[in-house]
Image 1 (tube, rainbow, N blue to C red):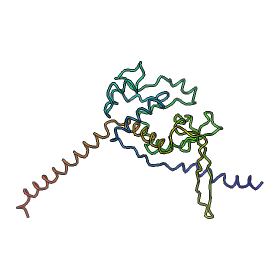
Image 2 (tube, rainbow, N blue to C red):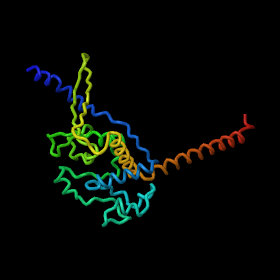
Image 3 (tube, helix red, strand yellow):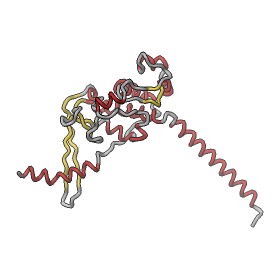
Length: 242
């Protein structure tokens, strides 16, 4: 009876905690790290491209971060694909909706719409949940339709959400993670794999981002020099006017 009353007492507290959301971790991605981008492309093709496409990214653009055409053909493409084609997926929207309840979204600009921090945290917070259709749930995206595609790497984890309320009514939530079954990678290795994958997703969202930033810096420097020259010219013109 006491346990039931405690459950009713903390029910609104748990609801408020769910609304607050899971705290996002800072993504350590770096678009200048070519090795990371190459590893992320490999993970994307092997684990994501079965269901999620990247229709705005062409295979030949993978050469922009150091891969040769032979490496792309041998390791990142299916035999029927061509270098100039986009990274489309064979799974149709209709089949995807039948299997998962919603069509798997295209990931071309997912990092721009969701943010790198969200992706980095989301891919590391799947847990087993027998109440869902797939047997998986996510701390960042509750009741997500997507199963844990990287579970063989991370292993199977369980999550217990424990709400707390102090005397002033302030709500806090404790997330207790447990490792139910090990994966092929350690926690550090898995975090590195997710970092590389997120790095690749950030890159394909705007492949020209690094060039754009460099051009912006050069443009600001040029404008700074022009400002100095313009100010000196202005002083020269107005030096005899009091």
